[in-house]
Amino acid sequence: MSKPPERPAVRVTVAQLEVSNDHGTNREIIGDAFKLAAGRRSDLLVLPEYASGFDPRGVGPEHAEPLDGYFVTMLRERAAKTGVAVLAGTTLPGPDPQHGVNAIVAVDGSGAIAGLYRKVHLYDAFGQHESDRLVAGPADAPPLVVEVGGLSFGVMTCYDLRFPESARRLVDAGAQVIVVPAAWADGELKAMHWRALAVARAIENTSTVIGVGQAGRGVVGRSLVVGPDGVVGLEFDERPNIRTVDIDGDALLEVRLRNPSLANRRYRVVPSS
Image (cartoon, rainbow, N blue to C red; front, side, top):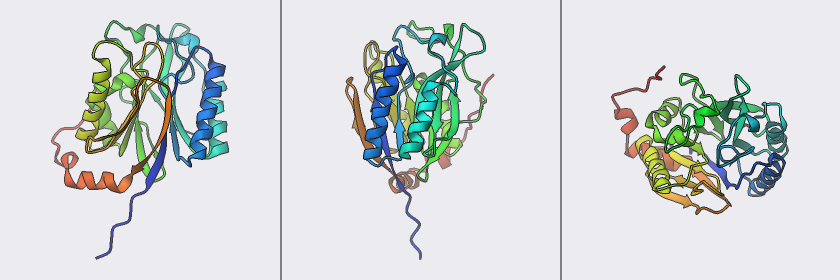
C-alpha cells in the first residue's frame, strides 16, 4: 500500500505591531517586518487589522487609502521583492465621505493582489460603534481563502471571531488555517475572550487558528497560534513582537482524521440578509 503524499509545512511570520496614525512610519515598520520574514524564509507574513493606520479612539475614512495607494502598493512591492506573501489590514474608501471600509488585503509572493475581505461584523459592542465610521462588507460575499505553500488560509477580522458561523463558512470553502488579523480592544475580560474564542474556533473546525493582534494603547496584543487540536503553540504578551512558526499540514490532516467532526456535522451556514 503506497504511503499518502506528505502535506507541506508552511512558514508563517506573525507580526504583532504597534500601529500609529502616521501612515509613513507604519509602512517603514512593515518594511522591516518583510525583511525579517524573508530572512527567516517565510512563505507568509501576517499583519494586524488596521496595519496601514490606527487610532484607538476609532478608525474611519480619514485613514482610508485606495487599493492603488501607498500602503497596498508598498505591500505588493515588498512581496514581489522578497517572495513573501502577506495578509494585512487596511482601510479603504467607503461609499460616501463619512465612511470607510475595514478590509484585509491578500498579496501573493509575486506581488499580485490575491483577494480582499471586507469585514462583515462591525464592532458595535462594548460601548463601541464601528458602524458610525465604517460600512460592513456583504455577508454573502465569497469567502477569502488563499493558497500559500500548498495550504489554504481563510481570512476573517477581529470581531468576526465572536461569530462561529464566520469561521465555519471559511472551512466550508476549503480553509485549513483560519487567520484573524485584529486590533482587539482592551477591557474587562477582553484578553480572556480573545484567547478562549481562538481556541474554540480551532477545536470546532479542526483548523489551525492564527490570531494576530496589535500592540499599543487600547488593544490587548496577545497574538497566538492555536493548533487544530486546541493546543496553543505560540502566544505573545501585550508588547510588540515578531515570531515565526511552521504550520504542519500533515499534523492538521491527522487531527481531522482522528476527530472527523466536520464530516459528522448536520447543519450548514447560510448568510443572512
